[in-house]
Length: 241
Length: 93
Image 1 (cartoon, each protein chain N blue to C red):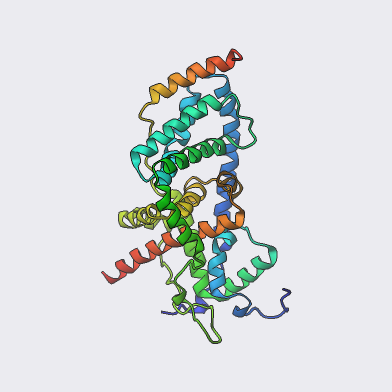
Image 2: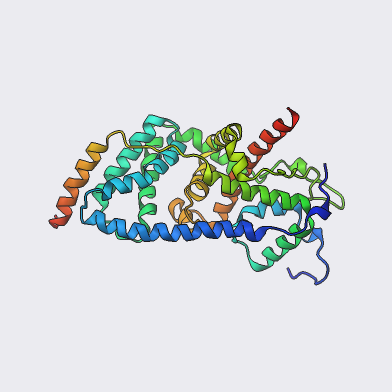
């Protein structure tokens, strides 16, 4: 069960962080493209609106599903969002990015719709349960007392040879991750989708959701941990087959 | 809050704390002192090194999950609305 500490030769944080930096560079490129797209939109250029829709429609649907929990309603919310975007383009002052503005409109419409459909009651109760919980991970995995209190009693087992590519090649693993994301409470799902699925940088996520960076990382980590547990459970199932 | 110099010990920060800080650490959203504590801990704790690697793997995988491409069900209406509003904008209305 225990991992031999001598096998830990070099911690690969540089590689892990480098991967994030690559995403940030991509994010800068997205911002530059947005400025050009906005200029074309304001010129009423044919195709510019189609491009905007193509760029964000799928992401908006994914996020809207987190608020209204019904596919058809999510589509209506996003359709309403696009109408509001069209109507608001002339007033958009670029105090935020185009993406932040569009997503903000969608969230506003989705929340409004959720309130009207009284679904928010269910979501609110889920949120409060989740937000009040301090535990990201089962506390019994740590020693509760003694010299090793707070340290692993049941450490995670390495995913030997399981690269992201290998895991993503397994339909079962992919399904396990989808399920884990699908059942996340709204507050966790929205940060995971924005930050990790759509690659929106942390500051922009905070701006869109109007939350602090501390809050973002608490939520983001809980969301990632739940997906990690889903992968862990999947791999444990594989090893016992 | 100052830490004594000397060989790193696991007790400077617990595994449980590492778990809480993992995502912020991976995003480099921790202060220098916290970053040092975490890095030291990870260098000598296989369980936490594994854990943080797994969270990084999850982060990367979530971004690579196949995404369904969605299209608006009423794109003609949207295009028309855009064209009408664009004309209005350009004419200064």
